[in-house]
Image (tube, rainbow, N blue to C red; front, side):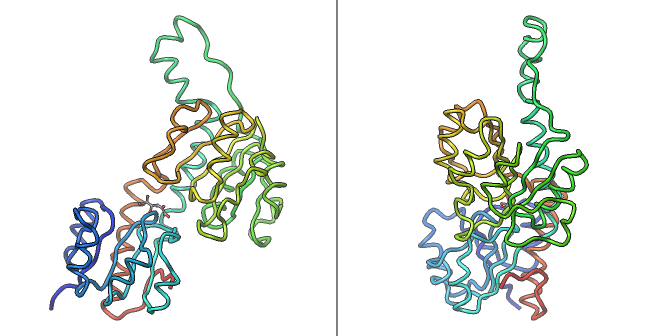
Length: 315
Ligand code: 8YV
């Protein structure tokens, strides 16, 4: 039997490619010199797409593939997949929830710690010889016991909250509804009120049209010159222009960011700011999680082509 042809949008680790190739013929979109011509050449064979959370599949791509049956996303976020276009054709969509939750929460929490205590600056102090020549490193801000606001108390937000609870932090959250599983936290529906409460504001919301720029200039202003934003979700959740302005004029204290508009080509203004900690969209980037994500991408594709129930369907 011929293997189903899968359009692979972005690169995956070798261990995933080797496993995928046992069951599928992979067509590497990201290596094509002329992506449109590549799609047109293989369009009558492609029945699946394997993509990444932040890359996805837009309407034009979906419409260019008449035999497309399934889009398997290597990521929990599927905001880059045009779900309306997929639904119109009964194309199935899967993602990789749960397996990355703990690592994303870990990185968010670690960014808050690293930024508050300026761990990177302190290492520079040691390496540059400043410790010996200038003396003690300047004092930094405590995390333990401070006020935290969590914007979006889903799987990842809840795990961030658990880590904050272990640091005796005063935790509030904002979400569409109050959650039974969060009785020990304060529910503050309005993001501006949440930011007013918080020293640290975690953004752990789903990306997409409904949450676009939910962190707007008012939320940023409410957080203030001593406040910090930590974003491990999607860049679109923050008005990046307002964020850059507030960081530059000091009306926001600090931003720890794993995601950016136009990544990996982020706005160059970020690079010259002192009050930022920048990460290369790597919150799920551990061996353990990426292996589990790759397996789930594969298992969903195999289940579909075997005619079995999908493991983690979105559509
Ligand atoms: C990426 C993510 O998928 O889970 C998500 O939604 O954005 C990430 O885990 C990952 O960086 C691989 O590209």
